[in-house]
Length: 408
Ligand code: NIG
Ligand code: FE
Image (cartoon, rainbow, N blue to C red; front, side, top):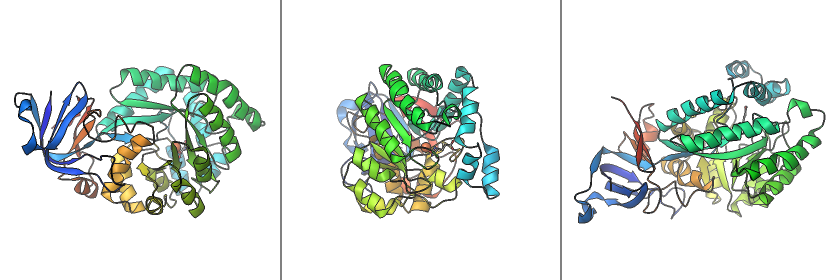
């Protein structure tokens, strides 16, 4: 039974209380067995039965639950640095998309990237994220947009789930954009998603969730409703890219359908917030995307004050959020959205786990939960997000196994 001692602050992120309650324990120890936490508490209370067990030291640092990135578009071919520059020169994200850039450009690049190369790229991103303390990553398809290319992306995630050190949670996002082959007949594409793609994905259990991008350039609320109802009939949970670039009724739809999460919400209305507050939908804030698109970010304070749990994630993708740096997203949740460091931490751990339906096994540190945690070179989480540095994570553990150790 391995024991981690000399933890200056153990931010457990236990479920009780609200978003601001991280239930930190000072001068703590953590014990686990076979990948599962068996005891934690003040080190002075460590039961004597553990006296002979192997110990390692956290070096009088902060320990947090393994970070959960609950919204990424992990597998894609190519990059779009030129669009980043074009936006800085004044073009808008939607203008670029309408001119054939944006998501459809990455679709072309992804379709022409060999499957093994996609696996290798994802592996590199996951390893780099582990070095930041990230232990679980939700990963969406959505850059294939044909039956075979969407299946390939989900097979990439299936292979990573079996062979990579990180936990990978796959989401089917066939309704990310209408692909060029269907540009003249979007109704037929929606039917293709519902009648061909979803059954194939569900039959092989290649995804846990189905997501839809509700936006002028993507899908309407009615189309999303039809897709998510079909997904539910196949046993998939629902997610929505909602109210990102305009208010398209995404939040109200998430509330109506009781999706697991409603993501983005930069343009959510007061009525949308009210609707969400009456449900158990988790809102997912993606401040890296709003920063790169230079738009006001999600009104997280209003959502939290209305009682909506707000998760924080990266939205890692080659267009709107070309960074998988979840601690950066947490710092931006503080600076751009006025979330406190405690709220940002609970948002990137327990509430992020909730946004992917895994809050009973990961996302907080408590007996019976997976021993996923990160040692951070800071006295506490406030200092961590305040004195932002690239190399703050010292070590990362998944199911009690060391998966990253800072070299120095
Ligand atoms: O979440 N909004 C839709 N999808 C992504 C952007 C994808 C892209 O630009 O390639 C997002 O921001
Ligand atoms: Fe996204």
